[in-house]
Length: 174
Image (cartoon, rainbow, N blue to C red):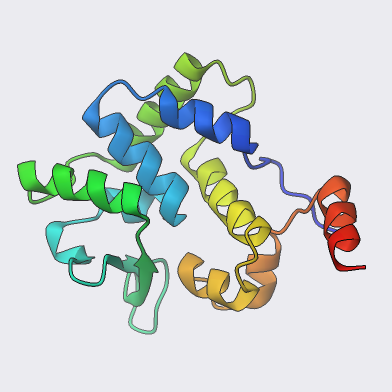
């Protein structure tokens, strides 16, 4: 089985990361990445127009698409936390004024402050989102849609389930 190089954060480390945020922008970046699974470039490109306010969802233009770069659309639901911090952020600015590199630096700074020893990047937070969804029982097809993958096999790369998780799930069902 394929093993990805960057393991998702444990629930404890994800909580430590979220609690280590000391500014509004850090909360926006960390909560949005942990709660939506967006790619760093997708987060960097968000504007007010990307939020479907009444439905509490994001309209994301992601990688690829039939008519060239960033023409593939998908809808991503927002958790209460992600919706609240995005709302506050966009009440101050119409655009998210951070580049992909700036977002990466914020993630690194917060993870260092949290004392997390494993390498933490926006993509690790994408993996963390995916593994959390699977642990909570989200259907893999729905996860595929939220992550913006064309093929289920791509989504399955994120399903690196530990032997402990597999045994616990087995015990619950049998």
